[in-house]
Length: 136
Image 1 (cartoon, rainbow, N blue to C red):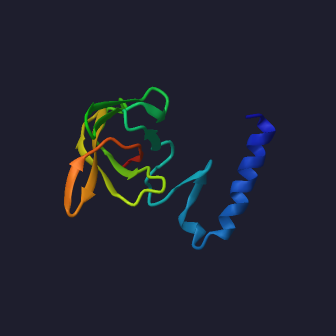
Image 2 (cartoon, rainbow, N blue to C red; image 1 turned 60 degrees about the vertical axis):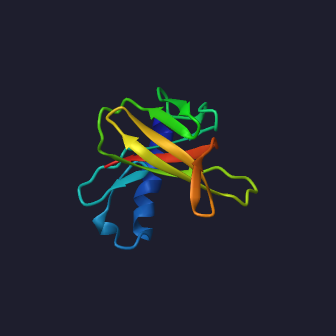
Image 3 (cartoon, rainbow, N blue to C red; image 1 turned 135 degrees about the vertical axis):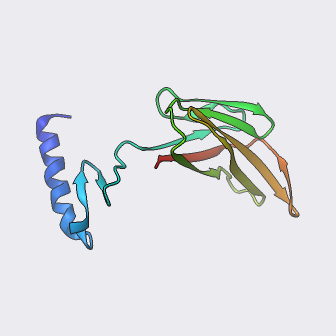
């Protein structure tokens, strides 16, 4: 980013502040704000993994793998368990009901299960999924 592009971006952010209700409660830094003294800069990550466990899109240095049918591990090496993960299955035109849940959380990885629910009974199945990880 050139110095001129940075100056333009800062100018735009300063002007956006007046359009947010109660903007005096926020301090703007780049594209992300600090509220109630909680920094969230650089602490949101996301990714997509296919049903075989291969990364479709992950942050740099992260890996994914399929441990068994419907069981996956994402390795991030953040060195903390102070995070939350939200997930979603990728379903194109499906009338089936899939669930993706976090089954384990460790300092450098987390595990997910992908489940096909049928009549209230679930069975592990391999499907593509998305996740968002946010440090807290």
